[in-house]
Figure 1 (cartoon, one colour):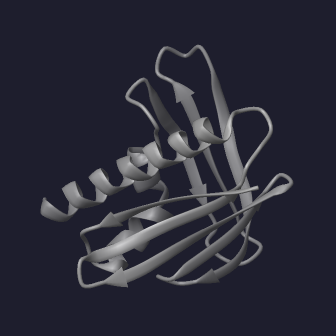
Figure 2: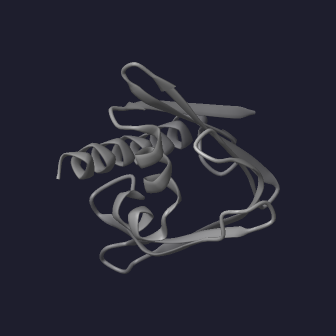
Length: 137
């Protein structure tokens, strides 16, 4: 089953793309809640290149790595990747109001569909806040 989340970012597509694909930026926005953070991120932005981010609870009680391989890239437009036996797609869709970022990914069996959708949406919403704040500064 595929799950899709999306959000509108009021910023130019080049800025949105950069924030989504730059390790230093990823470390600042890649979290679903304030009690978690991303301690490390790496990006080799090319087909066959790998990416990873280390997400940890701020109290140090738990953490995990999210990693995969890029399978298709169209700069400022489209990213496809595999992670384990699952796949994901990120679309960057410009409009007069900004850029819609749409993420579609294969569901996993451990967490409910709602939990997965809510978690990924929370991360995407945090991404929007980060980009729009950075755009203003």
